[in-house]
Structures are given as structure tokens and as C-alpha cells.
Length: 269
Length: 332
Image 1 (cartoon, rainbow over the protein chains, first blue to last red):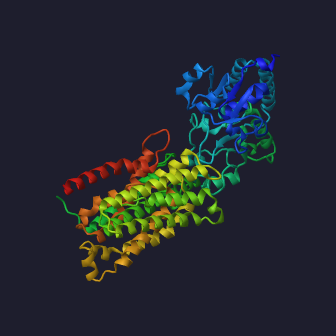
Image 2: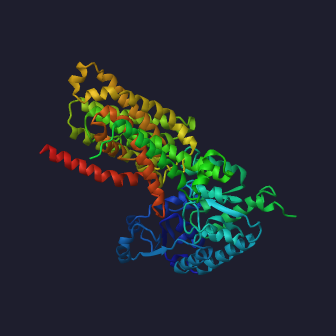
Image 3: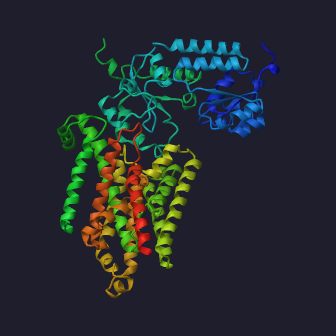
């Protein structure tokens, strides 16, 4: 292993990059993590993050912190200043938003290579792959619908869709022809009801604040009749390696459902 | 030029409203035929059809009525009271203030105490805004001052709404800000209808009561007083009526602009320019406009459903410009 002092110093400017970085970097090479990494509502690495200075992802932050590499997301709002930063010896490394689990592995591998941690990266990837493999085909092929309180869902071409298929579930939104991060209209809930709800971020909103969709009595009564699994918000929003942790919790919750719940069991021997 | 008598105007508006309501029940995600919609509405269809028509589409139609009637009647009443063609809940910042009240109640946990806190907060803020504006006009200001004060109030309420959404214990996203500023009646349920219905009924009743006095007020304040109009009571009724109806509907739909401006203007000529007679047609016309806009929102094939306020602003803003240009020409 390389001497930590010779590794490039890395700053990360948003939560998704933070999650990647703390998994594969040598702790000594991390210069700073984003302020979101300390927010227990969204971050699963609050304790780790306290050890590092926080940043708000701006160009000034990076000029002040002087990392060798800065991890940003493709939508980063300092793009116009990338040349200025390059002139100061700060390399901007934009990370794509992953659309599949293999994208997440690929991005992890790329970051590991850029920050001089190939071996650590491979170990993490092998471990995550192994954990994900163990989850395959443990549950029945429910027709599952991912739903956020605003009525948002995940159609084909999203990491949620990819994950559902990896776990052997059927994604109702994709089967209904939705692609990307669209909305699942209330009327479709009536015409093609799922066997299983996968609820994202329903824990974060109080009943009164949820959008009209999340409050709608029709959805509420369906949630009473249909088994639902809640997704832990802190492992869910980025679609990186940590997704395997969310997947494990989803599978565990589905396995804990009373047997025979959902229409699939009906008529089975 | 054809003539429509006030009575037949009301009849035409009611028929249009019913026709559009039926059309609105027919448009949606699920492809239901007219027969299936009627079956679902009357409870004779399949459970699926009943759920879709009665629980998803019908509350949306009823909310369009309530929101439209509130905005149309308030616009007509405020224009009559202030004798200013530009007075309107949206432009004067009454809707935006009601939205601020709703946001404060929702995001700072007042609704955890009671769900009624939501419309009550919205109505209180709307009342405060209306009272401030009225106090300004009493201080002898011109039409221009009133509109400028309204714009200031509106900007302030809008800014505070964004600020409140950002500072709230559970911060709202950009989507939430857009909802409160542009308004929508999608995905609403009967819970939302019941939450605003009582206040809208009382508010509209107060506004409609003012009809005869508004007709007399059109002659001038002095003349009205001589003819026995209690101006204090008239102002009180209109301020309270607008605050109740607009505040309660904004609490469930967000602020929808320009309806109260456009509708009274389009209908004024059919009631011989009498502000009192304008109230009922404006309420019905407001409902027609909101329903039509809500149908348009669903027919336009955009990746994300448009906000209702976008459509009303697309209609209303050019109209507002035309009014401003005309009033400038009149002044010269």
C-alpha cells in the first residue's frame, strides 16, 4: 500500500460523493466532506463526517481547502469556474448520477483509481457484489411500486428499477411504460394496483406536510390493504455502493411480512 | 352586436359550468368512456370506475368550483368597493398572503394541533393583507398607490413563503415552493374540499349580500351615503368575505393568479356595468375559467403536469398588460 502522505488530497462537495469517498479513501487523504454528510436526516455517515471539516460545495470552499482532487456531481453549480480551479492545481472530478448498480460499481472503480486506492476499491466492490449476490431470488416476484410522498416513482433507466430487478421484484412503474423519475398517477394506482409498496422518504414528512398525493385517502386505504416496505432514506438517495445496505433492509422487511400477504400467494399449493 | 340579459347570462354560465364539469370528469389518466364516467359517478359502475370518478376526479371538479367562485366573486367585489378595475386578490397580494399563512401553519407544525389551523391561518393572513390595503386606500391614495402597495405586499408574502419553506423543521423542496406560488388542484381529495367548503360558503354569502350596496356605491361615496348605504358595513363584509373565501381555498390549492382580474372584466358589459349584478356571474365565470384551465393542464402533454397558475397567468398576464395600456391612454 502506498504511503498515505503521497496520496492525492481529496475533497468531496456533496453527500453522494461523500459516501463513495469514505468507503474507499484513506482517512488521511480526505480534506473535507460536504455539510450534508453531518445531517442525520439524510446522511448515514454522521459520525465519520464529524472528523473532517465541512464545505458547502462552492468554488471558494475549494480554493480555500486546496485539495488535489475535488469530487463534484455533474450538475455542480461551480462548473463555470472549473478552469480557474484547474489553474490552481485543483482537479475537478465530475461523478455521473448512476442509472444502474453496475454504474455504481464502475464509478467506484474509477474514483478508486484516480485517488490512488485501487486495491481498497476492489475490496469494497467485491464485498458489495457478494452481499448483493446473496440477496438474489430470496423473495417472491412481487409486483412492487416505488413511491415517494409527492407521487414520484422510478421507471425504467433508474437505479431503483435496476435494484428491484436484481432482487427479483417486478417494477410496476416500468411495466406501465414509465421511464426515468416520473410520477405515478393516482388513477393508475386504481387500474393497476401493486402487490407491494416500496415507500421512500415517507418517514421524513409529518402527516400534515405530505403532499396532496401522499395524503390522499385513496392511497392511504391502499396502504392499509397492501404490504408496504419502507426504504431507509439515508441509504437511498444516491444509488452508490451503500445501496446494498438499503437492499438488505428491503429484503429483510419483505421476508418479515406475514406469509401469504399479497395476491401472489392466492391459489398457490 | 348580440345582447345577453343578466338572467340568461347566469343561465349560460351555469350550463357551461356543468358541461365543463362533465368534461373534466372524463379527462384523466385512465381511459374511461362517457358512459363509464356517468356510471362511476352515480355508483352503478365497477368499483374501479367508482374510485376513479368519485375519489380522484370529482374532488378536483368541486375544488375548481370553490376556487373559481371565490376568486371571481372576490375580484368583482374588490373592484366594486375600491372602484378600481385592477383590484384582484392575486395582484393585491391577498392570495400570496393566504399562501404564507398556510405554509406557516403546515410546515411549523400548527396543523398537528388541528387540521383547521390550516384554513384559519390562511384566512387570518388574507384578512390582515386586505385590511392593510384597505387602510391604505382610506388614507386617500390613488389607484396607482393601491396597485403598488399590492405588488409590494405580494412580493413580501412570496419571499416570506420561500423563506419559511427553507427554514422549516422539515424543509420543503423547490416543488413545494412552486405549488404554493402557482397553485394546483391535482390529486386533491374530499378531505380538502370539506376543509375549505364551510368558509367558502360563508365568504361567498357575505360577498353576494353586498350587491345592492355596490350598485349604489358606483355613483360615488357621498351619493351612496346619502342614499342610506352603510359604508363601514359594506367594507367589512367585502374584506371579511374575500378573506374567508380566498384564504380557505388558497389553503388547499395554493395561490392562483389573475382569475379575479379577468373574469369581472369579461362579464361587466353583460350586466350593464353594474358592480352589484356582476358578483354572481363573476363567481360562476371564475369557476368556468378554473375548470377550463384545469382541463388544459391535463390536455397539454407535458412531461410534468403544469401548475394551474401557469395557465391562468398565460391568459391573465397579457390581459393585465392590455388593461394597463388602456388605462394609460385614458389618462393622457
